[in-house]
Image 1 (cartoon, each protein chain N blue to C red):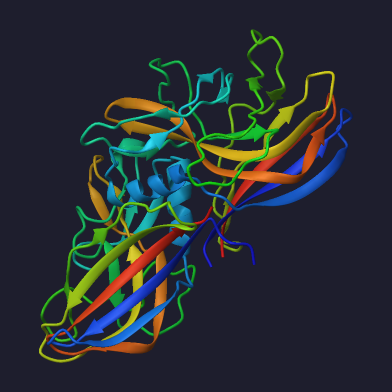
Image 2 (tube, chains in turn green, brown; image 1 turned 45 degrees about the horizontal axis):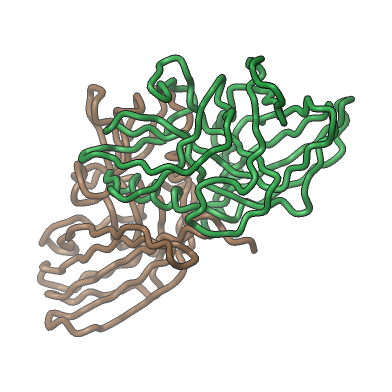
Length: 222
Length: 201
């Protein structure tokens, strides 16, 4: 009994035909998840927590591979999970939006709660960004994943699907999946994304050139 | 059965007036309830008119309408004492996922059938083991003059609207378990309830 997170994965070819459909159980929470749960229940942020802020650019996608960084909250700081309908400034600006996002990778994770990033993050670019040279995938349904109303009947709620398009000329392989939640810290004021779950996808999923990958996260009570 | 991302266990220790242990019970928690999903969803999908069911500082069941993201949050130790954190009740019915309250909350006090709620203690997350764990503990003392029967326990962080008028808040039940058989706490004795939250990796 407990709280489960799962992901429905649909792969379509360039003609829009579904060529693969899988439901993945997300098994592995990170230390950041545990730390956030603790902070949620106590409204106290440990001074020793390690988060992994990533560079946010465009609409809720990352344009650089995330790198783990230390974040030391000041006394009295409170951490919030950022609702997706909010618009907090990121990286010192007010024009950027931080949202929960789905991270994709082509590496293989060695499971550890201290993991703060995917092993081989695939760069994902906003559909609105034209400045990137060689994107691996383009997010086709910005700005990210929105949660829908909880279903009492099924004791669950789900995020609206996030769609990633392969605009390269070759197949992109996805072998790891992560959920980056957006967090907001009051002192010092900062907002960032941090890896909450990380799972290998085995066998890996291939997205043909011109095809898309649709990921729908569901939170379930069992 | 795949392991969940988040699960829980509980441990109950009953002592008599001399501090002697009369009963120890430890078991997996069976019932996360829908409040938890609502709370997560409300966090993720801020809409000013959303509301959630809680128990206020008088033990009454109320509804809190939530507001802006910096106007509400979860805590176990402030604002809502004594019913935030660990709760105990006298009910014995099986928990329902859709019920946001204990069947019959035991009020804090020294009257008949009441227990004096202690202070919640929550440990920092321990992640050197798998699953990672964190614990919340509270001890309830029976100064009622007679025995008190505890049939149900729960974990209920406080959740509220701290900054938007009117300020309202309460203990929001996330986990609900029934003790079978119910635990009898003798006069002068205590019952200590510990929930261990497990984050699986």
